[in-house]
Length: 409
Image (cartoon, rainbow, N blue to C red; front, side, top):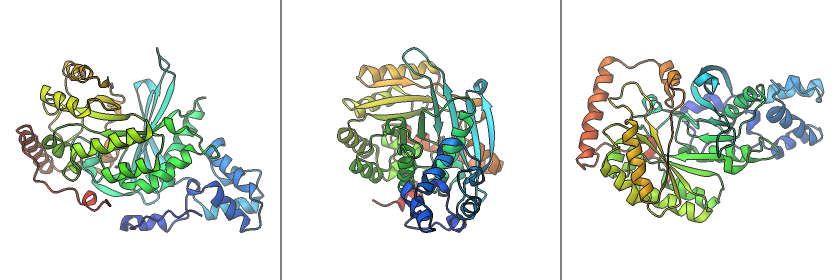
């Protein structure tokens, strides 16, 4: 059975680790060993994994190829699903579906399912955005997850069961998931061991069997994690949440920039592109009057000029308790024109699911309850002051978030 215990066990993770492991944590080899240890043939593992990953079985009770006593033992030994009581909200005529998943310790994470019909030059796609942590340690102020703070890392099974849950839903409609992006709640590279276990299972033809090039792992700039990925040489897409090319502004928008400045982040991403031959996707949330100026466009063009890179410009989703709104579309188009003039491939992504709280973490934040008016007012005042100082070129004096400062180099 694979080891799923992190190097440092977070106190909030103790209750989960006391539960039976999730079936999604099991590799074909570990599950075969479990059966052999009980005097059963190793091919039983194949029967169970097919049921878990391919047939959409609701539990071991439905694996009729297994003897009844063995099914009962599986029920006691493993959790078939580590996410439960998922609340679904639909928008865009059903093309966007947001799920709020309750975990075994009562905490919540989100996933978002998006269907894109075939269009000129593009095949039909069904993309799932998944979470890697409960909450997030980075604390980007335009992100609803940042309002929640950091809860704990997810186990690989809790990451993977978001995928299995969505795969069952789309299979009922005659479709299958074509793309998976780690862009939900949390910073994937601060939970890198579990994320890599999940990616391995997603890519494994004996389990989910999705090609690595259809998997995207995002980061807000954890440089040691990027370098570790480069050493492993994976072929999945690396996405960097860039948001600003000037350190004073990025200190505010992406607080871990105070530890790993933007030039260092882009240098690590550039090394990754050189080593893997895979272009880097840079995500930029466009915030009106904050990071959408001509100066910011020029700084980004200079930072990325000549790189194997693609920039996605994304209008900011409305997030409660911030003073900011999305950049107007003409401003975003002007920004895109500046990047394209520098030879940087650039697209403008149109938001999906705004009527269901499209911003990452917003359903979970709503479930947690609204902060008091005094807290909201203080947060707004602080962000206005910080962004004004950043636009003057002043570096932030705020500390690096505690969970980020403790990350391993």
